[in-house]
Amino acid sequence: MSIKSEKQFEMIIEKLNQLLEENKQLKTLIAQKDDELSLLKEQNEFLIQKLYGSKKETLKGDPNQGNLFNDSLFSEPEQTGDQSDEDKVIITKVVRRKKRKGLKDQQLSSLPTVDHIHEIESCACPTCKEAMKEVSTQLIRQEVKFIPARVENHRHFQKTYACANCEKSGTRTPFAKAEIPRLPLNNTAASASLIAETMYQKFEQKVPAYRQESYWKLLGYPIPRHNITNWHIKTSQYYFEDLVAEMRQELLNQKVLHADETTFKVLNDKERQKSYMWLFSTGKYSDRAIHIFRLGPSRSGSVPRDFLEDYTGYLHSDGFSGYNNLPGMTMIACLAHIRRKFYEARPKNYSSKSIAHKGVTLCNELFALDKSLKNLSVKDRYNQRIEILKPKLEEFFDWCESLTAHGKLRTAITYAMNQKERMMNVLEDGRLVLSNNLAERGIKSLVMGRNYVLKLVMCSN
Image (cartoon, rainbow, N blue to C red):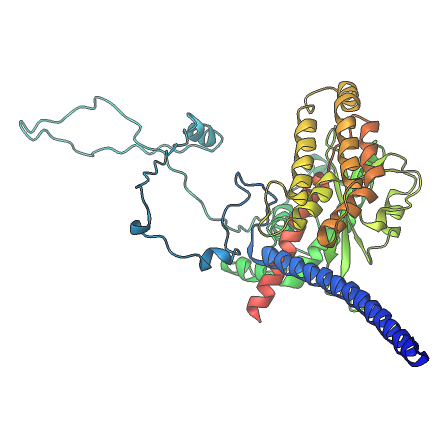
């Protein structure tokens, strides 16, 4: 082979190597793009499900049941009678729910009863025209009547008494005055019942002060919104702060606690777009159910650290990093949050063989197993968990560790493995539970009220 041919051959080999390297890089780039596209599709399906789908994390009997977001259902040809060889008769059995006997009487038994006797003033016989006599009285129906609220002006008169004998003798005449119950706040006509009703409407029924203005005006006693707000602030300072301090001390004496947090907008706080409302609660098996809300300027771990101070018991929480590095506490993870990650990772048209669906099923089995132990004593529940629940938990995390995935499924697996140590801590005491749902439910009313007020503001705009 000539020198010129050898050089051409080397150039061809070099060019081929370059093309092979470029091909390898392009394959890697395509794989990355495929992963990114798959992740974007997952996120798009997840957001559509969040926006339009069911919010409950429930499993249906048939995982492949048709749904609104399955586009393939609308592209299939319509089936007609001519295309079917055999006529299929579908028989649907309708099961009527049995009514609970005595439920209506049980509901009415706690209400004040007012009897209405309906009679004829002058009842004459249509045949002989003589007066007819009563032979029976029969209960025909019961109805619940609503009596609208009303505002009354209660005037308190004080009587003063003097000693007539001392007055006659010319000595110093003693006087005595009848005792009058004090109002909760000075310089106002608001009774305790009125202030309590405004608090109930605002904090339980989620009716803001500006909407209460029109309500009280309709009842005949207009109350400006700044008065309502001032009543709440003053009564909290005078009466509730000491009570909450006692409740907090009792809460810190418990062995098991729950914590959760949510965003909260404070209108007067111009510096922050949002603050955070924290909830600290006693455990499921505590003798006293205590919920204490604490408004924090941020989601920093300093809020639970300052509130719990030197607490050294067990604390249930989600996987938020703000609960990390709390001194002296044993952290307990939430299996419901682990389950939620797998639930959100299921593909749109998942099957029973789906890995994410299997993760949800395994979590459900753990919940069902632990629920069967709820009626046991603390000691027996602890022993049964060591014997029955511990192997199942270890099997679940071994299964997670053996998986390799990408996208939302990888997120679910990573989250589960990061919570493994905290989740296994549930085996240390029979008073612990598998989830943080107690705190989640406790803070739910606050979240629903916040969303309701936000919708009202959006509609008014």
